Image (cartoon, rainbow, N blue to C red; front, top):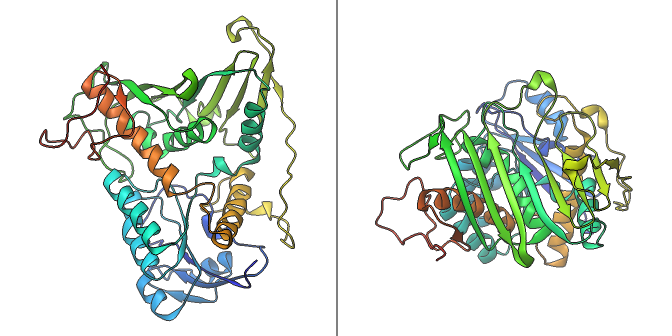
Length: 395
């Protein structure tokens, strides 16, 4: 392992945003890591902020920092997708590898530029899609591959279905679900979809008022059906207003139904998230019972300090331990990927695929037919002016 890794944290608190996922603490307690810089245009409570990251020096902007430091890795903490391309361009030009908050971007054209850029500059970009590093989902993938529930037939996914349900939920939280589908089963072949606004079919001019600046979005009820290789089917659903935070019953999650059982995990907001299995051929609607799957961590980072779970629930760090653990294994994977000259498990390519699936949902609804992947028209279906390449459809 290279010694030491020079890391810079970019976390601009001058720009308010919803809950973050603790990326700024991902390198805490890891061996051979030197957090050389903390970038934040807002100097309020600066010493306390730097204490969280352990950074040695502060800079107001990313370019200013790169003029003075030579980090190996830059951590981009913003969850606003339009921040990422300019930050990635500056970091890649400086030959910095990147750990980036999701979504990668709201624009498929921007995602394509990012893919070209990191390949040309030979830098590694690891995306903060924590499911690919979470013990529960890694265990779920192994069990699927081992045939624990027979032949997988259908994967069911839901967003959080809160006040952002529909279009905003699709890109903000649906990106996790869609990425997990491809983590388990590869790239989809096609999608068809139905999107509604106030009970009527969505039209191209519809726009949802979003809480965050996540690009064009529409619909308060979305249902999408994907076909994956091997005749495996996948569904994604988001409906506005199903989740009341006070109830604690978060519908976000993913379930895989197979010929001999089912595996399921919910993204509850508690401290732990459980993987559950239903064994046997009883149909779920006939009252099949679920049991917890024991989770055994087999990954070891030599000489790393134990994770500090007291951080959970503090500012910009979720209560679930899931995120601290996933962030640590993500940046460890990034460092190993740099050394081994391979792609991280979660990378710009599969983040682009998740965004392409989102575009495909809109394109399928608007065309009224199933839309094939990969998409040839990379413009957003809600922004299409009719002069570009026609949406490729089946039939």
